[in-house]
Length: 309
Image 1 (tube, rainbow, N blue to C red):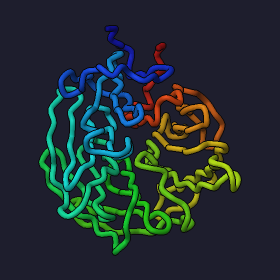
Image 2: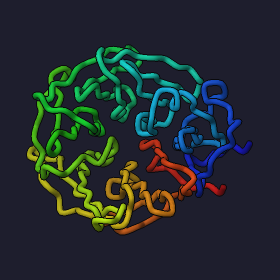
Image 3: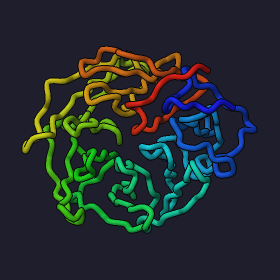
């Protein structure tokens, strides 16, 4: 097996791994560049070698890939469950479960950039799980429910997708108290996932999906960027539109002004780098229609390269 020494990479094309692929808990692959969904079979793709390992824990605990979440550095995987989260260390194979809040299924929402905090949703409530201590802090959202969150690069703020529009949770200096601030978004706009915040902390991505035609399964996505660097958040002039996709997922940031999207197209998924005007700058990889979904480690994207299959 060839080890890759020039930085994290992904294959130029993702394929379905063999069914007899050993599990990651038994043969750890090292830090991961991606995890993939091969129609209810889940696999981790290593960042520093060509290793691929199975993830039976995801199939046992989750219904979809989005219910498992790679840490930004690709070293750990958090897997949703009933009242707890299973965290798998991909470098050692060690597993540990953490209780979150009683009374409901736990959904992993976002890792903090330093992988110290894990934001979790429990029936619309928001909690922060500290690792490795296991301490849990509830976040007061003034009665709102949240479906998605994204940490700022310094972890002092948390963007939250609310019932209508997007808000901002600002933590005090000791990280205990929190204030919920409204952002200048339309009611139908949604936070663009857990990697919505730019690397320099200046921009936050929100999106609006519209159906191309009444009888079509294709969507058009308008992604707008909020400038949250000043005292008052404002809508920035940067805006892009991506047409003719079945689904759009913001995977992370290549640089402060380049965004990586997973574009679910009729013929498969493309990992595309676009600038803030929407111009396609690079295709990092493609995923055939025999794979249902893919997730990338957002902290590796600035250095990520493509390797031959």
